[in-house]
Image (cartoon, rainbow, N blue to C red):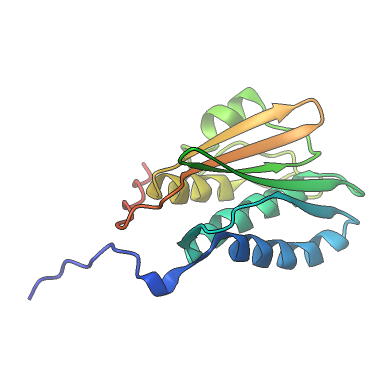
Length: 172
């Protein structure tokens, strides 16, 4: 008997990206209301399906961070677009953005230095490392950017997710 487990994502675990986005945003809108924050979804991703749990983990971490690092009475925007063979999900917040050190270390370490949350200054931003691992396992990339009006995280995924997901890289 072989102990090898297939890494193939069963079709039953795949969901339309639009549905996964809507579900995550619906949950986080309830959380956002506590800080009088809003979440707005822009764009379209009709006809695209991905592994539900992995994409939910990505979205939930990004939305959680965006809300945590944004001030009261602010807005978080989730933009989704498809161009050529790439699906791009951008999460824009009105927080402080990412320092140079954050951009360098946050994705590669499970102990990054993001510690400037609007409500939780002791936060370590551990979710970004989990996002990095999930995105790279799907064959995608992630960028952390700072805009004059806040932070931006850009997740780019292949339009057609591979039939076999690549295992997430091991943390060092």
